[in-house]
Image (cartoon, rainbow, N blue to C red; front, top):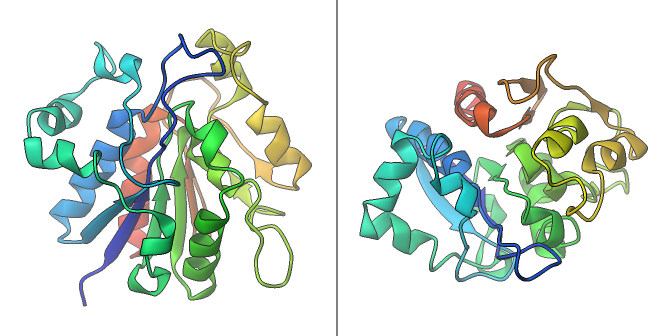
Length: 227
């Protein structure tokens, strides 16, 4: 049976200051989408509110915009996928084998407390599916509880964009919280690469997480390996 992947993207277009744009870090979606497509997997994209997912401007510039992102931007059909994303209430989690949370600083605002995303994540995981994220995508896992009331991330090894990387990216004063520390407070066993902005993936059972944009391809590959 063909495997099915549910990608999660943001609807937020700016930091707290409306003059500071942000959004989906495009290559975190395109790397994974390309790898899953090569496997013949069916893929769907959702966002908390549905509709448009804006793009992080920095992800569209050299050296961040790679071949997969350029190919996406050159394909009107693919671009349309990010103009017409589905809402969580339009999705049956039973139809999917894995969920993949993409990043970009924007997700820090709309991922953590979205009950629809939490419901889908819980259902996929408890049915034996894979929960995965890359970079800031792990903000979507911060508050997800399992049916027994425990946090999905408690006692689990994982990674995601580090506070050191926030500082080096010069956005530490713009983000609403320190997600690395918030994960640790929830009992997550946070790990990071020795060097910032280098690829790192952590696999803990059916939880697969990548640290930064440089980890997107490897994260998707590990998800595919498990599937």
